[in-house]
Amino acid sequence: MGIENRVAIVTGSASGIGKQTARRLAEKGAKVVINDIQAEKVEATVAELKAGGFAATGQVANIADKAAVDAMVENTVNELGSLDILVNNAGMERAGALRKLTEADWDITVNVNLKGAFLCSQAAHNHMVPNKHGRIINIVSRAWLGGAGQAPYTSAKAGLVGLSRVMALELGGKGVTSNCIAPGLIHTPLWDELPEKNKNFLLSKQPTGQLGNIDDIAEAVLFLADDESSYFTGQVLYVCGGRSLYSG
Ligand SMILES: NC(=O)c1ccc[n+]([C@@H]2O[C@H](COP(=O)([O-])OP(=O)(O)OC[C@H]3O[C@@H](n4cnc5c(N)ncnc54)[C@H](O)[C@@H]3O)[C@@H](O)[C@H]2O)c1
Image 1: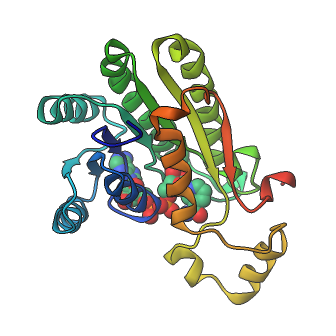
Image 2 (image 1 turned 45 degrees about the vertical axis):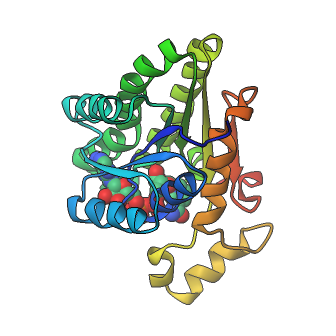
């Protein structure tokens, strides 16, 4: 069956990587649920997809809030009949040197990137296990290996790699796979705002000398989401132009 008619929630999909991932899943015939905290952008993304003839619904929910996550998953199953694919994509970062970071910086970064993925996965697997099928795909970052000035983000993404490995172990015999995709530098509006010298420095650390784009990540999600990818679990798939080969 591939991906066709599968039901997919993509968290944080009103923007960037998540939005393109939802579009590519929809193009492959999945019924996609657009989740985000930005209500207007959710509405606009659903409208864009529907205008293209794709099956899409919206769920405005903060993934760090258990009640909101449980309601999102219940609504999805009630409206669309199942939940087959969960892409834990929503993320954000508060960066800074260790001595400058606040407790609030730590809490929000860890709550969204790590606790949010835990809550969504916990709610989703309750529906996947009885169906003996599920694909959980966690968008981490090459920075989980370590990034100076990125203590909360690196910690949260490293935690998510750990969570993904645990889920692969616990759910492997139940038809549910769990994997991570680790993007490197990806072309987003933030990149365009960087000074030229910063761009050159970052690109000089890329073995391919290249900047990735949102489609590179979306295509990796399609691979892991496919029914045929059942033998691939507990892994981290780097999509980073080889940047993971260097430390720091
Ligand atoms: N862009 C990159 O270069 C890059 C590199 C490595 C990893 N990543 C990871 O990829 C993912 C997507 O990044 P992006 O660049 O597309 O970011 P983005 O900011 O364009 O999109 C993230 C979306 O998540 C939503 N979001 C934030 N907090 C939320 C919450 N609590 N509940 C629900 N939605 C929430 C935001 O509203 C936003 O629409 C993130 O997990 C990020 O850490 C991105």
